[in-house]
Length: 153
Image (cartoon, rainbow, N blue to C red):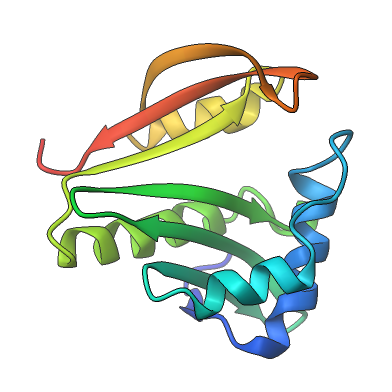
């Protein structure tokens, strides 16, 4: 079990690994839209954090969150399949939630596929609540669930 997590803001050199993990863990069956150039644009965006968790073998996981005036939107979160169930995802979410609270934001919103029960259970364990189900949210191919967490509760 991993007890400590090296979480930090991503570097440009992380973009390729992040994009590949997004393709392999999130965008399966939907087409690859989070390519390295898009990840790099997110890194350059002042209102977006791209956080990574690394271990001795490389990238363990990442999260991309966009910050608005009153709430944040977790755009992507992925953990390498070989490193799941070791606290990496929870640590990334906690780091991103801390960043949102520090920015004075009270709500984080995100989406997950209806066909991904482990992800839905993960977010529910972390206190996220289902707001609405959206038919065809994922490029018209799969339904999605919008979830949110009130950081001030």
